[in-house]
Image (cartoon, rainbow, N blue to C red):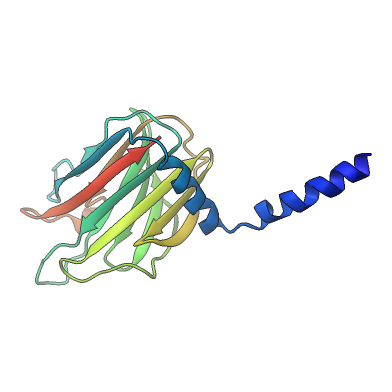
Length: 192
């Protein structure tokens, strides 16, 4: 009897184990979208100057979520570097931050610590005025994210498992701060 139960259980378990991280991310987004959002959609501009507040909070308190936002690249004439992203599980003591930047790189860090992980974003639009969409799913100790609808990477979130706020941000890196400039965001929305 045990062998029959195992034989019938294994075929249904195998496809789930064979799912790619991109498939898992897409399924989690589908499930989240079946519920009403807990914040947003929000839009606005974030100042990028030194000493400015570079984030817009969703004013939520969640651990597991799906967040989406689009960002417009600066229209600057020069080759000024920029970065935008989403910080999450934000508490008074800690936060996790996912950033994308004008060099075509994503970076993941905890609070003021150094970068934990990074890599290339093949689908990133880097031209002046172009738009990039970030989709971020956090569930337990795993995070999944996409840029412009293309899965990019799976993140290890075990460094920060607390519930907290979520915010969009710009000019996270000191070298990306410019007085008098702004980073526009739109469609910032969060589902629990």
